[in-house]
Length: 292
Image (cartoon, rainbow, N blue to C red; front, side, top):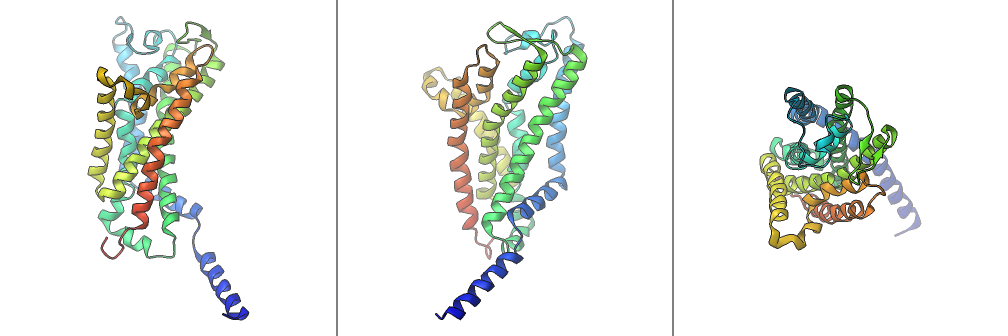
């Protein structure tokens, strides 16, 4: 091939690339689509309402104490900052995985159902960009839901029971400023297994082509992991179960901080999330556009 031909070919390649929307544009498209969907606001609404229901239940049973069998449960009437910590414990059982799966399990499957995925994949957009845009939109929604869930519990709990110091799991007391800092760090730690759950939901959405199957499948995975963690004979598996990593944040609420469960939550969550995303990515790249 002559030098002129090579130059022309490179120019055409650059032109085609210049005309393609980038990952940032695809990400914005995906966010717009999420905003237009009812299930997005169902998840956000649940994250907003559930902490309020918990606080109302505490107010309605003023003489019954708190959920003393869970971390920080005995302090919910002493400081509102204990409310979001207790909420994190209960949210891991099924609520937050379900809220996450509502969108993550639908983000690919819905377009299969509506027949719009063929159109997207035949346009001048790289499949990798489309997939990355969907991943970023899913993680954005997941983090948004978690921040709302924790934020509502913190603000309303503080207004009702006061923004007072918190007693850590080590029995020491930390001031309000440090308690808020630790709560933010705990939320970040908690987001890691939740994002891994979102990755599993996205994988199921890509493989099943069915939103309901992906949502239910994700919830079943969550429940199955919790069942495995409750079987005494399988205690050796507990450190490697994704469900157990939702408790890793508790290490931050000790004096001094116990980093071991926090670090374990990070790498175990990655062990679930990375293969799930890789599998989903490969399946997405191999998607038969003509056959759906």
